[in-house]
Image 1 (cartoon, rainbow, N blue to C red):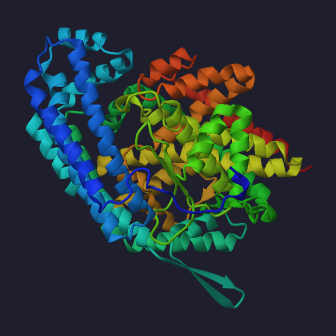
Image 2 (image 1 turned 45 degrees about the vertical axis):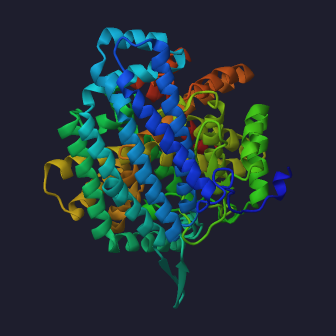
Length: 601
């Protein structure tokens, strides 16, 4: 395949479902229903002393049902993401969400039986008697048992998810995807007005070489979100209240973030050590921002200038899509031929949607339907260096999934803290390749971009999480308004930047723009976790060379079958203490010193 000749385009979903209105699709859904009914009949055969082989057989049957359901639901969601304005696509998503909730309710008995009705001795016997790949998964189930509710209560929660929080998130996405933006730029005595039907093109301008354009882009973005903050803020408050009511009041979790930590199979202490290290090292990036101000010839950076390029010439550089793809694949091939082969398969099967279109979901993601199916990747490619990095990032996710393809569905997905490992590692490989081809002056510019990205993926994400902790506490324990939540965010920015950056008032509305706060509360620390972890892994790779690759593949191929602390300890990394995380920040500080050393004399 001639990757260099590729053009942006949309994905081909026909490998999942050819026609959602066909009899073939109806029969496929009917086959799922038949399998669910057959599984329900076996409920009567469940008993604590049942043979481990029968127990594992039930696991396989349920996995097969969810495998089929994932194909239908995955098609519906991917089709909707490609065109959020389509009423047909939206209706199918709702239909599949309802079916998914119904199936989850009807198969819930098996999960609750193992958590609630099997004594410890028989639970240990069953765990020891099944295939080793399920051991940690089942142990984690027993850990979650104390937070499980009765079957009837769990069914009510699953049902309400579709029309409750799930519906609120869908409304948020639909509103945000439909937003249109008007950017006003003063050029001498004239005011130039630019209109954007998709926020991706607007957001790309925050990295413009023109200070006025950066400021205008941010003001345009946040003016729309502020205008809609009444509704978007109300959605957020309801999501937070539901998260707290279910998680703490009903399930008995220690705190809102503990809900995510236990789900990630991480100890609270590990996450606390990570966030404490980030808070302690905020001065590292403050030092960088002061240095960047000098490079830009200004006394102090404005928040508008956070991602300002250090060269007007470099800022305007555009990558053709095919060139970006071939650069990323060549980078992967230099690391390991298997990585390149796997990434190439995603393009060959046309599982990539890369063009920018009105009503298409913004941002980028990699979606895994099943470990047996090549992942799907959504991009909004605009040709900038950042878009090439995003391409490498999302294909890192795809490679992670494909290396875990031999695992059963139940344990194939990496836990959230490890979910960013391959994606960030892929970006670091790309950055090094780009750096090698540049003269010293250009290397300095790319290094600054890398530090910008380290800020965005480490410190910014940690402070997002620290904001969420405060926001969930305030909304859950006090009667706060949307304006008060915005002030919490402003205080968060003040601590994060210190006196290194001047922050304009409109940035208090930035939190309303962050979809992770709505989609997946407390997700963001996974980026900090993943990036700091990868800094250590990458340093190990540079020391060990090719002998590192099998160790790295072992981490990725484990998927979600191992507890993160134990898996990484085997690879030589103790993530439970602040010392480990400090190593990552030491490397960040080294990069900053390296940048200073490249400054012209």
